Amino acid sequence: MGAPLHIAILTGGGDCPGLNAVIRAVTLALARECGARVTGIERGFHGLVARRSRPLAPADVAGILAEGGTILGTHNRCDPFRWQGADHSAAAVAYLRELGVDALVAIGGDGTMQIAERFEALGVPVVGVPKTIDNDLPATDRSFGFDSAVAVVAEALDRLATTARSHGRVMILETMGRHAGWIALEGGLAGGADVILIPELPFSLQALAERAQAVELADGGAGSLLVCVSEGVRIDGDLVVRERVDDAADPVRLGGVGHVLRERLQPLVGCEVRSTLLGHMQRGGTPTAFDRVLATRYGVHAAELVAAGRFGRMVALQGAQVTSIPLADIAGRSRPVPPDHELLRAARGTGVLLG
Image 1 (cartoon, rainbow, N blue to C red):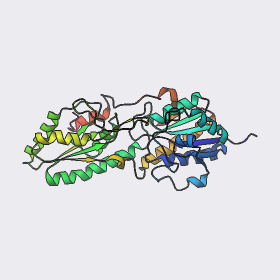
Image 2: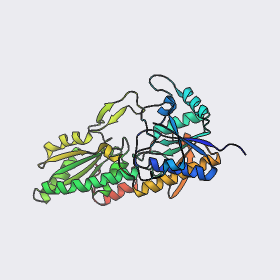
Image 3: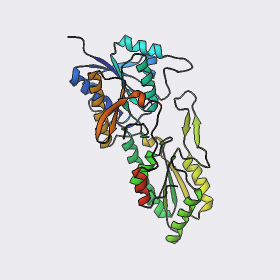
Image 4: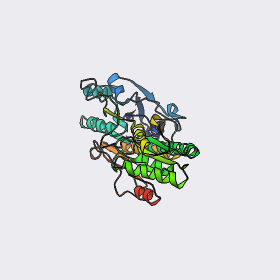
């Protein structure tokens, strides 16, 4: 009988609720499935470069199901293939070999999956687990962390609605999402937004102003309007860029479109316009029950793929079924909101202005 499998696990990219639930599920399922030994790589792919890791036994993952963030830490800048002006991939692979690792489970978004595919090409057996609050990974209907972010948006809109009605204001809420509008769309629907603006659909400032003016007139000057806008929405054809981080996988950091929209809209309406930026509130806190269950399902399926020797694949949710797809099929691709998506029809059907 050979030695038990030795599996490394890391969390790459930004943090989100549900990461610890995956770490827990992978560790417990591998121990149960094949008696595997698990090592956690600290701070994502940076841990492979900095040679930072620690053992993970079932006792080490007890009590972390509902904990936000990641007990292993993460890093959203370190791509070993181009970190600080050099290619550290050979050293990273050598560290995995030195640890005696048989396979790597990489949890992350599109950037993590691209790096994972490149490690697979170097001979490192890899299984990917999709993580992004943006829900923009292709071939999977849902990534864990998204439902938790949507819940934050919905609660924020609930709170903004009461103060908007009290003062007769237009309240603008800016969400994350990069170049995909899933968070703003689903969060806006859940929170009863009157207007939802997403990157996939162009919008008219005049149409938005007319909607606000109509509400003012209908309610004798005391009406209110809730606007949910995704950070990737273009104003006059341009993205609103908060900053550029040259050494990051995604150097363009969006943010501030809600403030710009407020400035453009205010002169066109009679009521006061206010803007709120949720930012990293959408990443923090405990995962929803849905995300805890989804993350657990993903972690168990990843462990099953490892035990079966099915590498070079990413776990995915398609319909009600957890399955897997080749990493090569998703690396470098994204999933915007389709123009005929049912959620858009639901929004229009309930009178939401989408542009």
